[in-house]
Image (cartoon, rainbow, N blue to C red; front, side, top):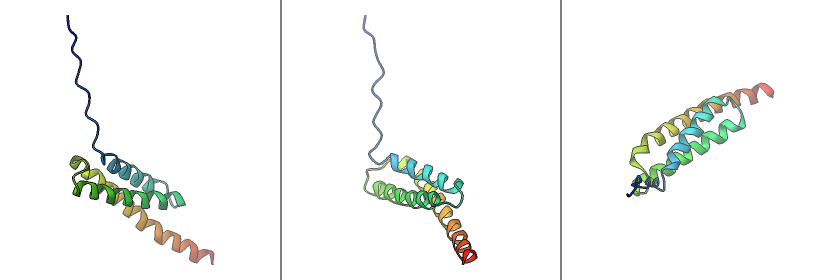
Length: 95
């Protein structure tokens, strides 16, 4: 009697983790408030989303996860755009 096992799961595409990381960092940037972590996460989200777009253009990324990269880029940009005026206002108020 032979037992059959499920075929091994396919490994994710080489660039499939970047869109997920971009989205997670973008969300973290939005919810952390106005700290240095916000700026760091926003910049990393934008960078990883850009790298994911490059991977997709070169055929290395997972095209199904492009929307995650877009969402990560949008969250990162929004967090960055909100962060800058607040920091400028705090700097002006402190001087």
